[in-house]
Image (cartoon, rainbow, N blue to C red; front, side, top):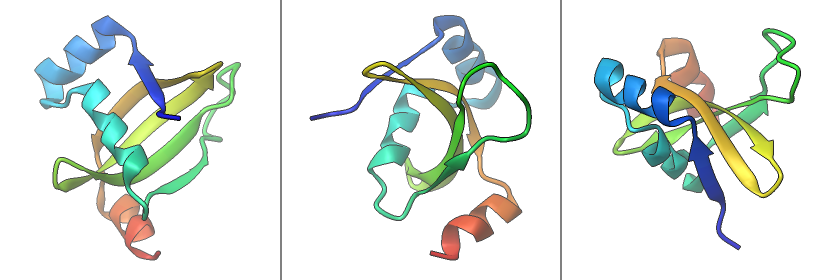
Length: 91
């Protein structure tokens, strides 16, 4: 079964305008067989959030997401920094 992705339309527009990143296109990270995935423990968000690091559009990205029923809700994304790329490449 294919994974269903969704996100806040306002956040998607902001990321596209500010960072040139289409949040829904970051679903490509989840198809990367080398992706890293771990819990986001930085804050208590009131829901379980996760971080995925993987390739999309020929680059390595970090994506924060949560699962809401059958939907993978994409919260934000950015080009992975040095430490995140190193974490990804350790696989």
